Length: 164
Image (cartoon, rainbow, N blue to C red; front, side, top):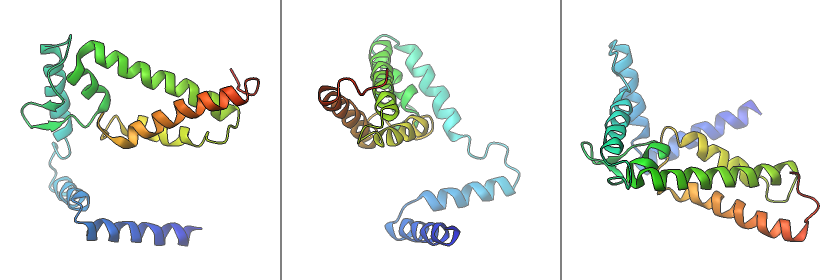
């Protein structure tokens, strides 16, 4: 099993390199900064989050846009980004969608519904959303749509099977 994981990891890194991804160079840069003793290594996102929070606080009702205005990048935190770009109204709506999807996915998972594995994808996006996912990411919305639609279908077909 360890051999399979090792081969898959090497293949993944090779594919990343061939695809022109900047992820590997970012890790190389981070290692060099840490070896130099740079205390601010990797703290770019903290600055982006701080500025994104300030941007949200400057227009909290309706928000002010999806990009953090100084860097012209998304906040790399879907929770902050939802409030920053849509204000309290959209931010709470976004959190409500996540909460409802979580509850439905949990019920499907506990009931061992056929598509309960979608909950794993959803939970992955919830956790990565703190560090990198954007609210525009289709890999966030696909599990949300799939869980909610499959929950309705499963509920209709197996009304007594769902765990509350």
